Picture 1 (spheres, rainbow, N blue to C red):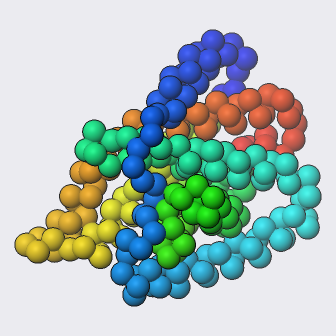
Picture 2: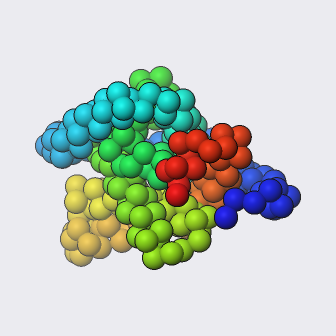
Length: 246
């Protein structure tokens, strides 16, 4: 539960999460431009577009019926942009990043986060050279589709099971982060199958590259999401956030 007496612990946990999330420069972000063959890049665009269209419809409906949620939606988008733009070097020589999609998925459901995630990835590709335009469909499916749907499903299941609210938020955000990289590993395994073991062996190799770094990042993102929602509830009072978390 959200209690003021946990502020000291929150400060310590927030400091630890920030220290973990604010890493040094690495070499790449998301699946980089031109890394996927043309047919695979197109396929992921085709798979992602229906989710984006449904997300736009849900977003328009939400803004029409609940215009008071615009500020919270902007907060969720900024959270995704900031966290997913952080480069964290991996011990395996790759790099990784948190996603931030769990917070918005818990508050608004997964479909609005598809739109926000695609917008964030597009800006990062154009302005920060993170990811790419040809790989936008693949990156959007892993981070803006799979991540939010996993976060929302885990959140709803745990809440219906009577789990503690903070535990539910933490688990939903952390698993959404991890699942994003599982999907990315599968995407790369499909494109670059191992000559001996095929797609499964290749996917396991990519998971081995990402997992060592991504597990602590997912834990840090789960803690940070709990703390951010805690503070939003504290300052908002009896508003839309408390209603969404009830």
